[in-house]
Image (cartoon, helix red, strand yellow):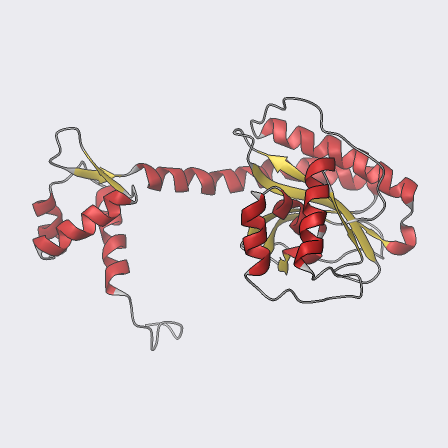
Length: 271
């Protein structure tokens, strides 16, 4: 037993769900009694377990109603996991090109609850630059990518998330009032991009835009981060234009078919 496992107590019901999935993943569809016997579980509790898993589509019955197999939800989760890996491999060349075009750091992130998780980073060649790392998590309300991803949610869901936690202040510019943030999300939805005006880190601005998947759902957001000493409106406008081209290309490669070109405008801040 490893040091991490010492003192660990497994959750029996969760463990049983996992062993059922492992069993069915490597077999032809199985009868309830065979699953119970194979796993040395009571048939009554195995029946209840399988019904619960079937309700959530982790298992499903064959057409004859006599055997169980892996359900559609497992396949959906597997595809989602593959898609996350695919989006990074598709994004990285575009991000590298965006760094060449702008000279600034480019990041790709996804939203989890009220945090953004960074999936990929292409760093600026300048000594003065935003420093970040893949896997890093930041509060969404203080970042351009975070506000952009929140804006792409259903407005009621965005409000629920914003009101579910206490929003910390990182700089004097951090917006922590929920109503003000909701107004900002409405503006982001309308114009198609989000900004961060030194709201998370003093001396850093950025602009961010959503990346869309095959069904028109938002699968990530990409940003260009610019140190304030190098930033002005012209720099911001160029960053927005090149970022828009990159996210449009990435969305297209991810399977999105745009109904119309997104609206744009001048940048007054950066994410």
